[in-house]
Image (cartoon, rainbow, N blue to C red; front, side):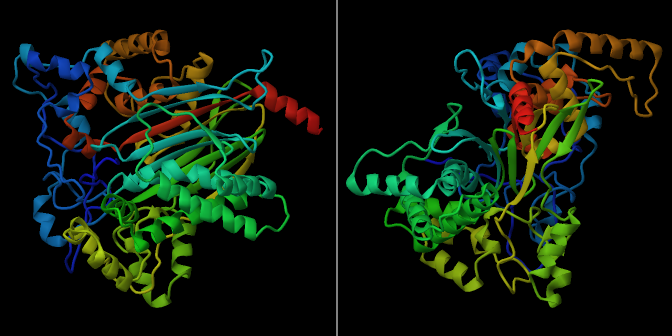
Length: 570
């Protein structure tokens, strides 16, 4: 069973004539002192990664997404904008550095920090690594393997990740999925999208063989080999429904066979669009099973962005919908590291994306399409799966809600109609696909949800991962960023950097190492254990105010195989 939706960071909407924007998280909050007391009897909870429950007063609202946020929000980063009458609940916050450095009046005996082993236990709880098998002592794949990890901020986490090897075609699929208005849509997309992509890539003969096997009741050819962490579950209850929708898709591909070789770019686009269409259709049709009926509606009314990589030899395709990102780590001739963007955010900061949205609607809507850097003044990503509130007509929305289960009909969010809603759809799941031919200097690929990119610049990501993978550190002069630093403080910074280099291999997973930096870096760009401890000690209703869920996949490339392929083409 899918985890129940909780108060959401992007899509918390209340009905009403006027709405304002509020942030889901911020680096400004003067609520806690720089030391958090922790009774001794709570230490077993900490060791079991239950630190988020300590002192928690979170308001859990299963299957609801509104009116349950803490009263500490301002106006800058939230993904959705609630009704104005709730504005009084929200007030500005102080800078997080103020929170970190604020002096409390507790005695030293009352101060509490997680120990390094406790920090590591939390950071490593969701890590996963996969190494591509060797044949005859050699790795013949362009991918050596990958590391992945997740750090929740929402409860439950709304991010998802997937990785699989294509068995009937060549190549490997990897993806990160960032959910909003709950985790239902991200969960469904993480389970289903790779099957749609794999089917889109299959030759006509293989599709016929699979269909004949289903017709005759024979065992099916395996399409994907999944590489999953134990927490990356599949919904058994919906498997039959999902299979039937997928089968209808491949039957149509058989009927539409043109005899031409499948283009990867076209296959990726078709798979994204078809899955989103099936999510919409399943919600409209409903299901006699009450659980499944509510599930498909939760999936459709929530949303998810997706960033997927398909690697086949030296051919790398990135299909992106929304604001997660793909970044290539390149090692220059002098050994330094540089970052190459392989995706573009689909939001108001992307001028081409804003122009695309405007050209798809009448000029009379030009002033209302994008307000406060949000689609219709509400949604930050301009492309996403699900989110039928931005795709269906008002009439269809009302019909589905009225005929749906009571949980849906009683939910103010689902009944809410976006303002200036005249010519839907306003949102699409069609991905932007970028192709890159791998070179020997292309050492790794980072796929990550926006929780990482909001805290770290891509150049810092490239350097940190590159130095971790190679064990070679190119020291830069310590930048103090305008701070007044005494000689003693500078000595402390240098000592800390030396200790950090010697302990870099405490992480056996590149994604974990990157999360450690994303959460624990101080103003000087080094991991501060005290800061990291405090951030990981925050109760769950506070953690989501400082940062988003973070999901990272780091793919390491095989330079020898890539170089050999390059030489063969010369």
